[in-house]
Image (cartoon, rainbow, N blue to C red; front, side, top):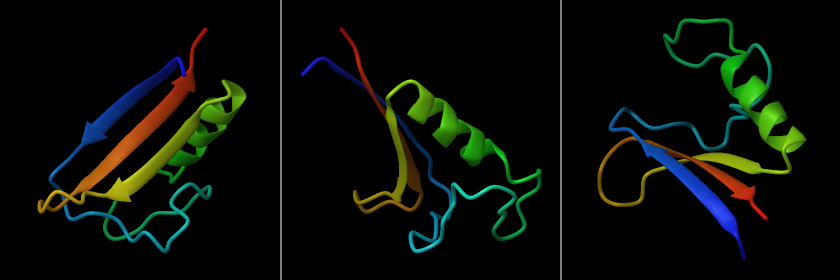
Length: 73
């Protein structure tokens, strides 16, 4: 299907999957910053026709996986 997948995994505490982490100015926990990083990433992905997601790991380790799916021709 000519899809480029880029995945990044971490071993942090994971995310609250029921929260809208892509909403602007949202910060959870003791995170610093303005709360715009994932909002900007989501809008950039949409502009390129890509999909971005962040989910908790399902391999028995703590942390999250960020994934970008981009159709290439």
